[in-house]
Length: 127
Image 1 (cartoon, rainbow, N blue to C red):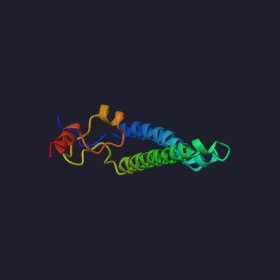
Image 2: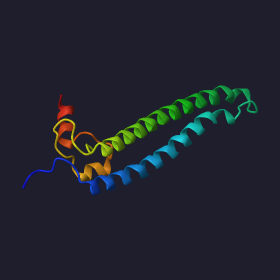
Image 3: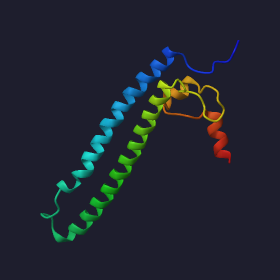
Image 4: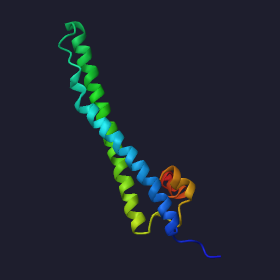
């Protein structure tokens, strides 16, 4: 029996549907984070006592930084999912970029944008 070199069109379609669902959810989350980031100024501190004003400004800055970092991570995740869709269209999806072997379906279901098999990833961490 020969070893599979790529996933079938039916399997690729299954992964495409999974990725599209994750992409939709990730996009909604990204939009929520961006909206939250732009609305952080909405809770004005002008009506609080001067004692707490400095503390609230500091907390507001920290919240903005955290929301910005979350939004950046979410955008990177979205870009990785979009790249996975391109690999599906090219029929190269699910092939480890290091070993050239198929990445197990279980891994792709858990991390649909994966480009490395577990073995290749562990090898990279050893270096």
